[in-house]
Image 1 (tube, rainbow, N blue to C red):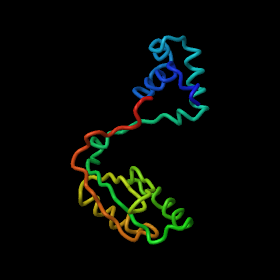
Image 2 (image 1 turned 30 degrees about the vertical axis):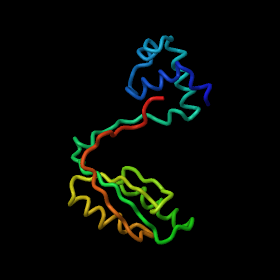
Image 3 (image 1 turned 180 degrees about the vertical axis):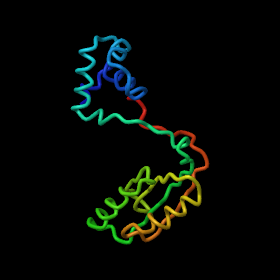
Image 4 (image 1 turned 90 degrees about the vertical axis):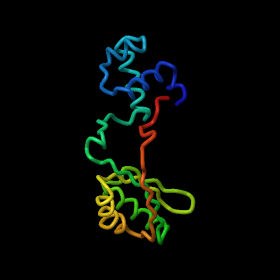
Amino acid sequence: MTDLLDPINRRILAELVANARIPVTELARKVGLSKTPVALRIRQLEEAGLITGYRAILSPVRLGLTHVTYVEMRLSDTRHKALESFNAAIRLIPEVEECYMIAGGFDYLLKVRSRDMADYRRIMAEKLSALPHVASTSSYVAMEAVIEQGIAPI
């Protein structure tokens, strides 16, 4: 894998992270190669799983989703079947932007995006509290996003 991350491929990845819609000809000019080798390198990066897809990144603020709450979740059962059940159910809640299983004093950490506190309270009451095996939750409201972005270029 490290041989795939030569300086040119790193530049290609950085350019694609900045603008995934960049034409291959422009990308080739920026990295100092012709179009065909750049297209081949992109295909290799995709096949190796370094590039997993391309997508539109929407503005949560423009969509009215300005309220971010982090939620600690403790489960009443952490056996394999209970975790699988929780994982399947949490994936069905669109307001949950991120969910991580945690090693520590609680079991899961969620990032929930909503319109406002009333909307978050509805999500908590109707969706999060109804998840299988939830024993308790603690919510932390974000006041300001100081850094909020995807992975930085390598």
